Image (spheres, rainbow, N blue to C red):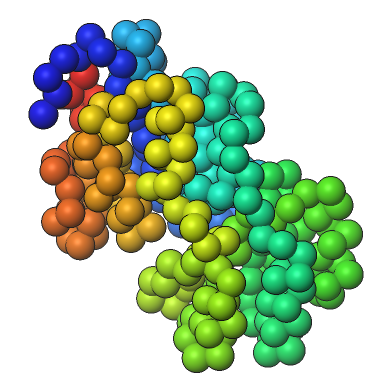
Length: 265
Protein backbone atom coordinates (compact mmCIF):
# COMPACT_ATOMS: atom_id res chain seq x y z
CA UNK A 1 0.00 0.00 0.00
CA UNK A 2 2.92 2.35 0.78
CA UNK A 3 5.50 2.11 -1.98
CA UNK A 4 8.09 4.53 -0.59
CA UNK A 5 8.16 5.40 3.11
CA UNK A 6 10.91 7.97 2.55
CA UNK A 7 8.53 10.30 0.68
CA UNK A 8 6.43 12.57 2.89
CA UNK A 9 2.89 11.40 3.51
CA UNK A 10 0.01 13.38 4.97
CA UNK A 11 -1.92 11.73 7.80
CA UNK A 12 -5.39 12.97 8.77
CA UNK A 13 -6.71 11.92 12.17
CA UNK A 14 -10.17 12.12 13.65
CA UNK A 15 -10.16 12.72 17.41
CA UNK A 16 -13.13 11.14 19.19
CA UNK A 17 -13.09 7.38 18.90
CA UNK A 18 -9.88 7.45 16.86
CA UNK A 19 -6.93 9.40 18.27
CA UNK A 20 -8.55 9.66 21.69
CA UNK A 21 -11.25 7.67 23.42
CA UNK A 22 -14.66 9.18 22.75
CA UNK A 23 -15.61 11.77 25.36
CA UNK A 24 -18.83 10.55 26.96
CA UNK A 25 -19.27 13.82 28.86
CA UNK A 26 -19.06 16.87 26.61
CA UNK A 27 -17.98 18.98 29.57
CA UNK A 28 -14.62 17.20 29.56
CA UNK A 29 -13.76 17.39 25.87
CA UNK A 30 -10.68 19.48 26.57
CA UNK A 31 -9.22 16.76 28.77
CA UNK A 32 -8.62 14.05 26.19
CA UNK A 33 -6.53 11.07 27.17
CA UNK A 34 -4.39 10.11 24.19
CA UNK A 35 -2.63 6.73 24.39
CA UNK A 36 1.17 6.97 24.65
CA UNK A 37 1.48 4.71 21.61
CA UNK A 38 -0.30 7.33 19.52
CA UNK A 39 1.88 10.16 20.83
CA UNK A 40 5.12 8.29 20.13
CA UNK A 41 4.07 7.22 16.64
CA UNK A 42 2.99 10.74 15.65
CA UNK A 43 6.27 12.17 16.90
CA UNK A 44 8.28 9.51 15.06
CA UNK A 45 6.33 10.04 11.82
CA UNK A 46 6.90 13.80 11.90
CA UNK A 47 10.60 13.29 12.60
CA UNK A 48 10.75 11.26 9.38
CA UNK A 49 9.20 14.14 7.43
CA UNK A 50 5.56 13.04 7.36
CA UNK A 51 2.83 15.59 8.06
CA UNK A 52 0.11 14.95 10.64
CA UNK A 53 -3.18 16.83 10.82
CA UNK A 54 -6.11 16.70 13.19
CA UNK A 55 -9.33 16.38 11.16
CA UNK A 56 -12.25 16.64 13.55
CA UNK A 57 -15.90 17.51 13.81
CA UNK A 58 -15.15 19.62 16.88
CA UNK A 59 -14.98 23.37 16.62
CA UNK A 60 -11.53 24.89 17.17
CA UNK A 61 -12.54 26.06 20.65
CA UNK A 62 -13.19 22.43 21.62
CA UNK A 63 -9.68 21.24 20.83
CA UNK A 64 -7.99 19.62 23.77
CA UNK A 65 -4.97 21.23 25.39
CA UNK A 66 -3.26 17.90 24.66
CA UNK A 67 -2.90 18.89 20.99
CA UNK A 68 -0.84 21.92 21.96
CA UNK A 69 1.10 20.43 24.86
CA UNK A 70 1.39 16.63 24.52
CA UNK A 71 1.02 16.03 20.79
CA UNK A 72 2.53 18.33 18.20
CA UNK A 73 0.85 18.26 14.79
CA UNK A 74 1.19 20.23 11.56
CA UNK A 75 -2.29 21.66 11.49
CA UNK A 76 -5.95 21.44 12.35
CA UNK A 77 -9.07 20.82 10.30
CA UNK A 78 -11.97 21.59 12.62
CA UNK A 79 -15.76 21.84 12.52
CA UNK A 80 -16.03 19.26 9.72
CA UNK A 81 -13.74 21.18 7.40
CA UNK A 82 -15.14 24.67 7.84
CA UNK A 83 -11.97 25.99 9.54
CA UNK A 84 -8.41 24.99 8.63
CA UNK A 85 -5.02 25.94 10.04
CA UNK A 86 -1.66 24.77 8.69
CA UNK A 87 1.53 25.61 10.56
CA UNK A 88 -0.37 28.10 12.66
CA UNK A 89 -1.82 30.01 9.71
CA UNK A 90 -5.48 30.05 8.67
CA UNK A 91 -5.89 28.77 5.11
CA UNK A 92 -9.70 28.40 5.11
CA UNK A 93 -12.53 29.78 7.21
CA UNK A 94 -16.21 29.42 6.25
CA UNK A 95 -18.46 30.07 9.28
CA UNK A 96 -22.24 30.03 9.40
CA UNK A 97 -23.57 33.49 8.39
CA UNK A 98 -25.44 35.58 10.96
CA UNK A 99 -28.77 35.51 9.09
CA UNK A 100 -28.78 31.69 8.97
CA UNK A 101 -27.77 31.53 12.62
CA UNK A 102 -30.58 33.90 13.60
CA UNK A 103 -33.19 31.93 11.64
CA UNK A 104 -32.11 28.71 13.29
CA UNK A 105 -32.05 30.24 16.76
CA UNK A 106 -35.57 31.62 16.30
CA UNK A 107 -36.76 28.11 15.46
CA UNK A 108 -35.05 26.32 18.34
CA UNK A 109 -36.16 28.94 20.87
CA UNK A 110 -39.78 28.82 19.66
CA UNK A 111 -39.76 25.02 19.93
CA UNK A 112 -37.51 24.75 23.01
CA UNK A 113 -34.96 22.53 21.28
CA UNK A 114 -31.44 21.95 22.63
CA UNK A 115 -28.53 23.08 20.49
CA UNK A 116 -24.77 23.70 20.79
CA UNK A 117 -22.76 26.30 18.88
CA UNK A 118 -19.03 25.80 18.35
CA UNK A 119 -16.69 28.53 17.21
CA UNK A 120 -13.00 29.27 17.12
CA UNK A 121 -12.95 30.76 20.61
CA UNK A 122 -16.33 30.05 22.15
CA UNK A 123 -18.55 27.10 23.07
CA UNK A 124 -22.20 28.05 23.60
CA UNK A 125 -25.36 26.08 24.34
CA UNK A 126 -29.10 26.62 24.48
CA UNK A 127 -31.92 24.48 25.87
CA UNK A 128 -29.82 21.78 27.54
CA UNK A 129 -31.06 21.14 31.07
CA UNK A 130 -27.81 19.99 32.66
CA UNK A 131 -25.04 22.50 33.22
CA UNK A 132 -22.09 22.36 30.81
CA UNK A 133 -20.04 25.07 32.50
CA UNK A 134 -17.22 26.01 32.80
CA UNK A 135 -16.24 25.20 29.21
CA UNK A 136 -19.60 26.18 27.76
CA UNK A 137 -21.59 29.41 28.04
CA UNK A 138 -25.35 29.07 28.42
CA UNK A 139 -27.60 31.52 26.55
CA UNK A 140 -31.35 31.99 26.67
CA UNK A 141 -31.91 34.55 23.91
CA UNK A 142 -30.57 35.45 20.49
CA UNK A 143 -29.12 38.64 21.97
CA UNK A 144 -27.24 36.62 24.57
CA UNK A 145 -25.93 34.34 21.83
CA UNK A 146 -24.38 37.23 19.89
CA UNK A 147 -23.03 38.80 23.08
CA UNK A 148 -21.38 35.53 24.05
CA UNK A 149 -19.90 35.18 20.56
CA UNK A 150 -18.44 38.68 20.52
CA UNK A 151 -16.13 38.82 17.50
CA UNK A 152 -16.17 35.04 17.11
CA UNK A 153 -18.12 33.08 14.48
CA UNK A 154 -20.04 29.80 14.69
CA UNK A 155 -18.29 27.14 12.64
CA UNK A 156 -20.57 24.21 13.51
CA UNK A 157 -23.90 23.51 15.13
CA UNK A 158 -24.55 20.33 17.10
CA UNK A 159 -28.20 19.42 17.53
CA UNK A 160 -29.02 17.44 20.66
CA UNK A 161 -32.47 16.40 19.52
CA UNK A 162 -34.13 14.23 16.93
CA UNK A 163 -33.39 16.05 13.68
CA UNK A 164 -36.37 15.46 11.45
CA UNK A 165 -39.46 17.10 9.97
CA UNK A 166 -39.48 20.90 9.84
CA UNK A 167 -36.28 21.03 11.89
CA UNK A 168 -34.32 18.98 9.37
CA UNK A 169 -35.89 20.91 6.49
CA UNK A 170 -34.83 24.24 7.99
CA UNK A 171 -31.28 23.15 8.81
CA UNK A 172 -30.79 21.41 5.45
CA UNK A 173 -31.89 24.49 3.51
CA UNK A 174 -28.52 26.18 4.02
CA UNK A 175 -26.36 23.68 5.86
CA UNK A 176 -24.88 20.26 5.28
CA UNK A 177 -26.13 17.84 7.94
CA UNK A 178 -24.76 14.64 9.38
CA UNK A 179 -27.62 12.84 11.11
CA UNK A 180 -27.11 9.93 13.49
CA UNK A 181 -29.74 8.48 15.81
CA UNK A 182 -31.17 11.41 17.80
CA UNK A 183 -28.64 14.12 17.04
CA UNK A 184 -26.99 15.89 14.16
CA UNK A 185 -24.10 18.11 13.11
CA UNK A 186 -24.39 20.94 10.61
CA UNK A 187 -21.93 23.17 8.77
CA UNK A 188 -22.05 25.34 5.67
CA UNK A 189 -22.73 23.35 2.50
CA UNK A 190 -19.57 22.37 0.66
CA UNK A 191 -17.62 21.87 3.87
CA UNK A 192 -16.60 18.35 4.83
CA UNK A 193 -13.50 16.53 5.96
CA UNK A 194 -12.61 15.33 2.46
CA UNK A 195 -12.70 18.76 0.84
CA UNK A 196 -10.61 20.05 3.72
CA UNK A 197 -8.07 17.28 3.16
CA UNK A 198 -7.68 18.28 -0.49
CA UNK A 199 -7.21 21.94 0.49
CA UNK A 200 -4.43 20.93 2.87
CA UNK A 201 -2.77 18.59 0.38
CA UNK A 202 -2.74 21.37 -2.23
CA UNK A 203 -1.33 23.83 0.30
CA UNK A 204 1.55 21.58 1.43
CA UNK A 205 2.26 20.04 -1.99
CA UNK A 206 1.64 16.38 -1.15
CA UNK A 207 -0.39 14.39 -3.70
CA UNK A 208 -3.52 12.43 -2.87
CA UNK A 209 -1.53 9.24 -3.57
CA UNK A 210 0.34 9.88 -0.31
CA UNK A 211 -2.66 10.62 1.90
CA UNK A 212 -3.80 8.51 4.86
CA UNK A 213 -7.03 9.05 6.80
CA UNK A 214 -8.22 7.43 10.01
CA UNK A 215 -11.69 7.61 11.54
CA UNK A 216 -14.54 5.81 13.25
CA UNK A 217 -17.88 7.47 12.47
CA UNK A 218 -20.17 8.52 9.65
CA UNK A 219 -18.87 12.08 9.51
CA UNK A 220 -15.53 10.55 8.46
CA UNK A 221 -17.09 8.84 5.45
CA UNK A 222 -16.09 11.38 2.77
CA UNK A 223 -12.46 11.54 3.79
CA UNK A 224 -12.15 7.79 4.24
CA UNK A 225 -13.49 7.32 0.72
CA UNK A 226 -11.20 10.04 -0.69
CA UNK A 227 -7.85 9.32 0.96
CA UNK A 228 -5.43 6.94 -0.73
CA UNK A 229 -5.36 4.74 2.37
CA UNK A 230 -8.30 4.64 4.79
CA UNK A 231 -8.17 3.13 8.27
CA UNK A 232 -10.90 2.45 10.81
CA UNK A 233 -10.39 1.80 14.50
CA UNK A 234 -11.75 -1.47 15.86
CA UNK A 235 -14.42 0.46 17.77
CA UNK A 236 -15.74 2.03 14.54
CA UNK A 237 -19.19 1.23 13.23
CA UNK A 238 -19.49 -1.70 10.83
CA UNK A 239 -20.51 0.74 8.09
CA UNK A 240 -17.25 2.66 8.49
CA UNK A 241 -15.13 -0.49 8.66
CA UNK A 242 -16.55 -1.74 5.36
CA UNK A 243 -15.45 1.40 3.51
CA UNK A 244 -11.85 1.26 4.80
CA UNK A 245 -8.74 -0.45 3.51
CA UNK A 246 -7.61 -1.44 6.99
CA UNK A 247 -8.95 -1.89 10.51
CA UNK A 248 -6.53 -1.17 13.33
CA UNK A 249 -6.93 -1.81 17.07
CA UNK A 250 -9.30 0.31 19.15
CA UNK A 251 -8.92 3.94 20.17
CA UNK A 252 -8.12 2.92 23.75
CA UNK A 253 -5.41 0.48 22.59
CA UNK A 254 -3.64 3.08 20.47
CA UNK A 255 -5.02 2.21 17.04
CA UNK A 256 -3.58 5.36 15.45
CA UNK A 257 -0.12 4.51 16.71
CA UNK A 258 -0.28 0.93 15.48
CA UNK A 259 -1.43 1.98 12.03
CA UNK A 260 1.36 4.54 11.70
CA UNK A 261 3.89 1.96 12.87
CA UNK A 262 2.66 -0.61 10.37
CA UNK A 263 2.57 1.78 7.42
CA UNK A 264 5.33 4.33 7.86
CA UNK A 265 7.80 3.40 10.62
